[in-house]
Image 1 (cartoon, rainbow, N blue to C red):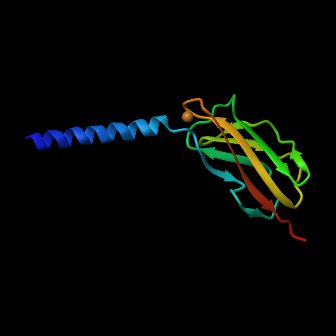
Image 2: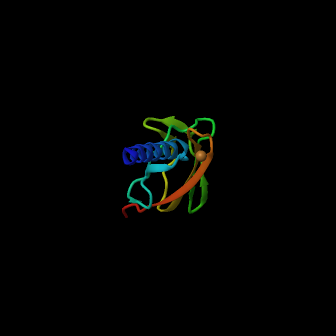
Image 3: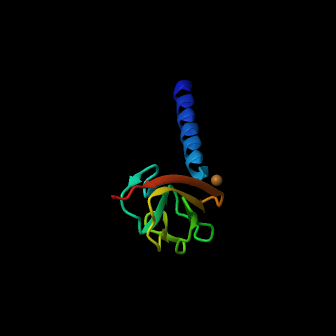
Length: 123
Ligand SMILES: [Cu+2]
């Protein structure tokens, strides 16, 4: 009898802890296009980053740096499936690029991150 009680209590506790951990987790990077550390052969028409939560539009921002410095992107917009997206209005030349992102999810905590990709155009 006592054992059953203890077991039921432990299961309840474990479930509560797990649920709390999920609710309180920060938003995180999920995937992107171009992909992180990818080598691509064509200049991308846009940069898109997916997250684990719905991005807050007012805080979301994408920027792109290349061999010659900052590249002007179109406005950062909220895209489908928990993503943010910005157009790349000009064709990029070969080189290494860094995408920087800023956003926030359910708890409003601002998260930042960056990842790189390489553009290697055919000669
Ligand atoms: Cu948070």
